[in-house]
Length: 132
Image 1 (cartoon, rainbow, N blue to C red):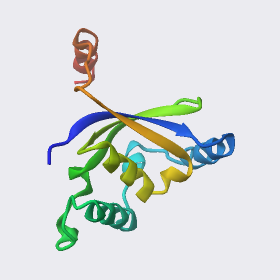
Image 2 (image 1 turned 60 degrees about the vertical axis):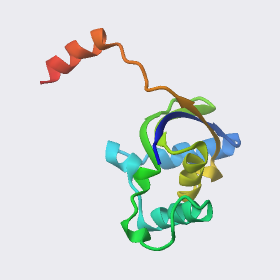
Image 3 (image 1 turned 90 degrees about the vertical axis):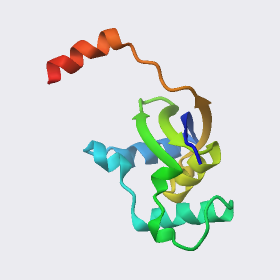
């Protein structure tokens, strides 16, 4: 299956769920912590793919969840909603992935397919050259 780019808009269920979410994420200190996946979360997500007939139950230990839904970037402010950039096979895979880690307890998600994000290279290239 081919993955496509999606922008997911996440809206909190309530002010309480927003408060709980920010209480949880304030503990995340490094970039890699945003993208960690435990075996339990992986198995829940893979079972959702099995139930949708996207994969077979045999050989699940060899399946990479990132082949079906991968969050690339997260854009979190202090508002009532925030955005994420995903590569996924479809919107439901993103929703299932978030449900597997319990994020659906805090928010509802709508994922919209988009073309590859456009970048202002005139602005970015000089910054990249300074980093090198």
